[in-house]
Amino acid sequence: MRVRAYRFRAYSSKTTAGVLKTQLEAACKLYNALLHAEQEEYEENKHTMNKTELRQLALDLRKQNPEFQVLHSQVAQQVAERFYQARKRFFEGLSNKPKKKKPYKFLSLVYPQSGWRLSNTREVGLGKNRNKRKARLYLSKIGFFTLIIHRELPEKQVSQVCVKLEPSGRIHVIFLVEEPEAKELPSKEPKRAVGVDLGITRLATLSDGSFLENPKPLERSLEGIRVLQRTLSRKRFLSNNWLKKKRRFAKQHERVKDFRRDLFFKLGALLVEEYDLLVLEDLNVQGLIQKSETKRRRLRLHDSSFSVLRAVLEWEFLKRGKTVLALPAYNSSRECFLCGGINQNLTLEDRIFHCPHCGFTLDRDLNASLVLLKRAGWVPPFQCACS
Ligand SMILES: [Zn+2]
Image (cartoon, rainbow, N blue to C red; front, top):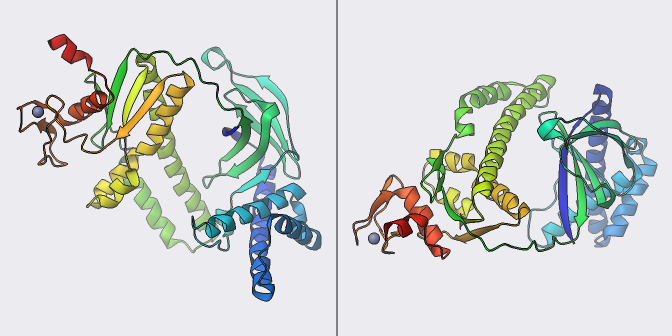
């Protein structure tokens, strides 16, 4: 079984949004209360509470404290579950010790099997969007939300529902669905392959010679973001004005993120239309960011979001039963496509690749994408045309 998340935009009345906020605050307090109780228990009795005990503790706290009673009982248990998972990650050495949560950062509630209901699904889309539907989601103790169901949702297999308040004020609802492992689609013998080199100047260079400039959405809106950041820093922390500005700030960032995702999906749609096999570099983006010397380069690497791009491309290809190959990135831009020699002197600034061994000269990114295609065992079409 694999778990897949279906995320939908949700709309609510102001009252419901207000209730959600109150509940998030209560859930945050409950989390901190659990953390505190657990620490005390350990200090006094050297006893580490297990999952069942934590869940029971959450229910007990809810019974004693009217403030926590606004929460659905299962939601309260899920808060305990979240704390348990955080502690487990800490024990396994994967993260830091769970800390007290801050109310303005505690932004999601989870409903397991019960406490929610989808109803009144109706079609709203026309033409290309004819699969688009609207539905009402009822969350027990919170209220009604209108969801835009833009893709098929296997409603019966939903194992848990998460409602998330984005820092910008948007609400998303995420359904977790347990699906049987995707049946291996009859993978057709790939006929057309393309190598894609990801870069900062050109976001993607294809081995067929076409390329996509990097729109650098973050860098472009940086000025506005900086102004907002400055005004934010002048407001009193957690005051109403601070929260207002914080929301504006989050909106700006959200816009950048949306633009990027949209662009990636469009690129993916174009590529999957044309090709059966996509060859990419297996980039270690975190490593690249750490290695880069200037702040500007770090920013641009971050702005290009190669990991998101790769995830989107892989998803689009997989959906159509096609393949994405990620090959080790080692030396891919220094290797000569024609003779396989290595140009050690190639720097980041060189836009043109010139091979010191055979004299082959080509655009740097194009050469890299061709090298990738060659490493995957594909002879690019233009060489066939030459011989
Ligand atoms: Zn060469």
